[in-house]
Image 1 (tube, rainbow, N blue to C red):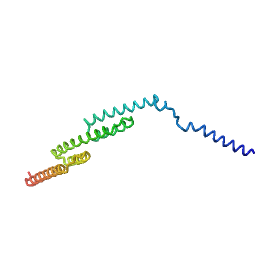
Image 2: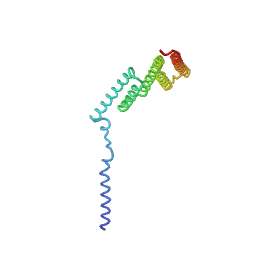
Image 3: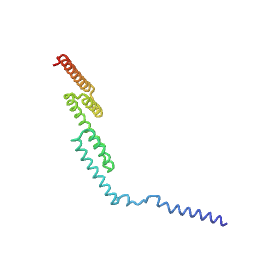
Image 4: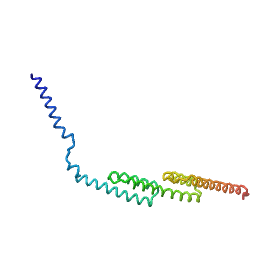
Length: 177
């Protein structure tokens, strides 16, 4: 009989232990704790909101003053901090991204012209490729404009090559002094 009592005692002990552990495993269903955040949670939320506001300010400043990649980083930082703070707005993100790419398209055309004028053809080609990629991102890419700019670059390279060849021909024709 003692074996049966021991078995019953073991079952009761196991059941009691399980019942005592359940409250520690299940989160408390206290409605006050879910509606009122602790002071630490409030401070953390304020810090996240402050970080998001700072990142937004830096992004706006970067859109005005910085080049594409720096501003793109600022856009990503703002998105991340705004998500963490629970303040992310997809429409606002899309608008900032559009502004960033429009600025890049304008800057790329400007740098293309400057490098072409200064006969830095490799750099002009990079600007042209950047213009093409970013205008495609915006949906404003025009293959005819791209082809015209490519032709302009090709003609400038050919003109420079002709001038260099003429200089060499003149130098070869001059008698040594």
